[in-house]
Image 1 (cartoon, rainbow, N blue to C red):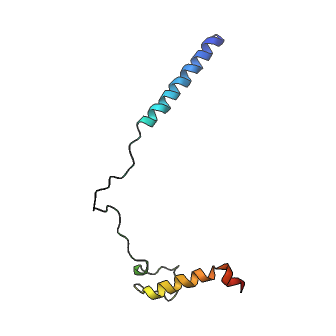
Image 2: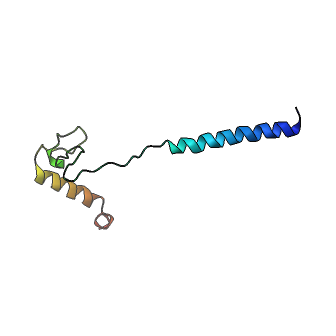
Image 3: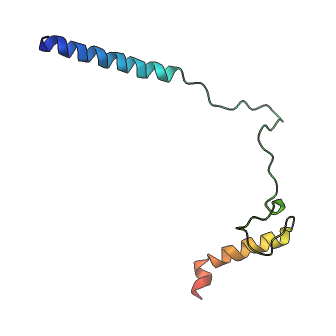
Length: 87
């Protein structure tokens, strides 16, 4: 086998590989959701304070207690406030 035929063989294999890659991209299906006016197709969300307390949630939180949940969020945010902590 000569050098010229070996180069031609490598070029042919590279061309076949390039064509395979290009044709693979043509087979991609559309991933856009088809929205129908007025019909939400996703999962319905609940209010954050209506969830069951997990073992990782703060103590004193009960299901449906909005005031306690909001107070806990405000307290947590203030504990992360650098200006508040510097005083």
